[in-house]
Image (tube, rainbow, N blue to C red; front, top):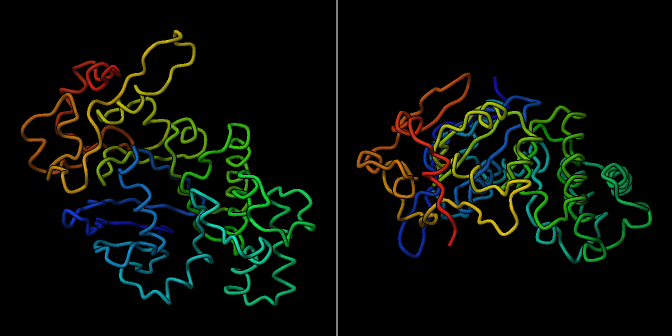
Length: 335
């Protein structure tokens, strides 16, 4: 039985323009020790998908489908039951540590809190464990800084503190939502190596969200490419990188800055912009922006087509995509 199994997950949100489908039929599974990456433009559904896993959606959100964690159905689970899982069996590293940390509580108290809530440790025992966690994630002079406040730490140190909180109870599933946003490349590398080392050490499953394809390539074994609340391509990371089948995936790769490219050259972009949720077509969400769009693309959601070992694509025009130079047709030179 998989640790996590998601089937036909659909999330409808209420917007000023009416109800909108933010996630449309997402499904995947994850075993213990496996690593999974989610990529795609902002607004494609990555963060709201993992918020659904953690039970952190807005109260007005309407969720259907199935999310099973060790066989337990989470869709419709009462909040009291969810709190028993969240922070204990399921941990999350949030994108912005300053909003994840409470500015009026010391970091020692915040790291110790899940240990007291879920493990029933005394204040002294939880403080001792918090110190060990802060030392493990590389906070210098941790013993002297347990009673310091979040604003007294650098951005990289705050992210390490958030990681310590997420790992406090030894979760089976760790979700990292853009864990290196706004950090310089040196600190980014350190944070990712820390997460990777802890995942391997503790045998946790990892879901990593990132806009950076290089981060995905180096840190996860499987990946999902999301657009318009739908998984448009999925498979082993090496396979997807080697054989980019969906026009959207090809567009993402074409838009990457190339090492050694002539100075002053223009970057390729995917033409158009991400539509608002209420404006997504009933068929393929990429219809209209895609150079291979046909009338049928707007009508019906494309079925999953297997193109290799565990490599799947949702596109009804794969033959046309393969016949053309998609890297040129999907990409549009920036003005």
